[in-house]
Length: 354
Image (spheres, rainbow, N blue to C red):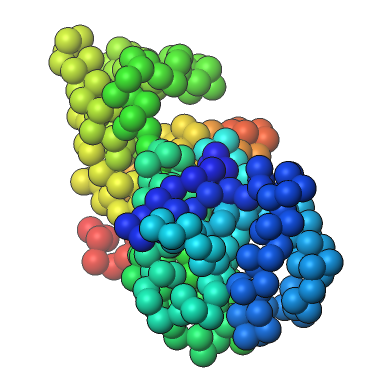
């Protein structure tokens, strides 16, 4: 996520304070404005380190502390330019595509009860989606603060129970990377197929396999695999990516079916000899990526394969999902960024036994 510099809503504009606080004159004027925002009543629910007096030195020090840890945006009334509050965004880069942002906001007492908070968060979500970057937004709410909970829920945030505790409810919203924009403007945007997968499928060229390619994009892997005689179902959220895949498969008369679907909810039809996940799961939140893997490995046929390429820090979680499944798996390849396992025994229920 590129740090937000400026966005607007119907009544407000939010703009990064970086230029303002780096100018002595503008910073001094901002301190005076903040005296009407950073009041004891506004700050009462914040941690003790964020409490302060309303003196010029205290506010100036508060600005320095916040700027060191977060991207802070000044929220102003579009008509009058009056400072209404602050939007505080603490950003953490989780992977190549996924960024986590913890958000908070403060409004002056005079701005309360007018729907500004809901409008502001809606504007932030719209801006994030427009950027096309993959972002996981989190907002913590003190238990009992139903008004702030509603603000987040109105904008699509859901309670994250694993991150909540006795004092704070954590709400999250996942915004996926917009690969559709990339695919719409760039042919073969992700380059050549991954070499580990090239080697694997070449070894099985004489034995046609049914392959489920999750997050297939424009077919970086699927086209190569199809040329070897394998049958592929490719799944991706991007209509442009699936269009390119299906057109390429049609031109070359390859056995490839491209499906537009969200991999978090996609349910495969039948079983597959190979489940292929090439740098796809890391674009999801940790909870979602493990749920997706757990669901899909159940569609791997007896003796079938799961081939994963992903971030090294995610591999242990993938291994735990696989080893905790009802089926038995053999480790064929275990590298920092790749995991190949083969099913060596399936638990069959009585309803499927002949």
